Image (tube, rainbow, N blue to C red; front, side, top):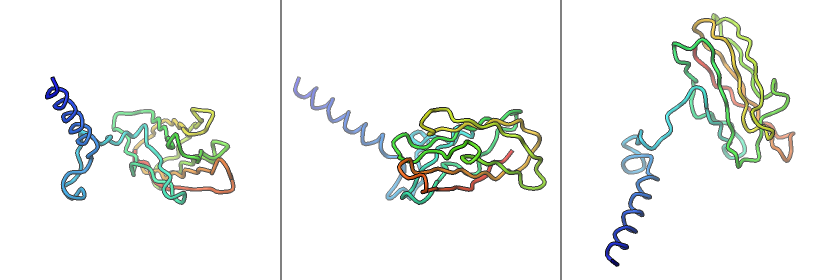
Length: 154
């Protein structure tokens, strides 16, 4: 019985250690483990605050799937961060076409009262590239503002 308990503990610890390895090889030199890393989702990019100085989106560019007529993107900040999306929502997200892309009319809104998530929806009107700007403010001191300027590809 003691051997069974010891074996169960060893297996649990071993599997836990494997679950925390997202990179393969020494220092991740052999790539990443696709089974353990979240694949990019053009509808749900995560926004990280790095060193309280930078906004980093986990995918760039955001790539729309070819068969989509309407694009919905929900950007999310980490729940535990003190940073929130700027207000009003027009300050939090701005989407601008890069010539020759056609203009779009995104409709954006916050999905939660804490302004950790903001969603934008627009009708796709052909291929093109769109630059966007995200703005987050420090909840404790809204004079501290961070911006990011990644892009979307239709």
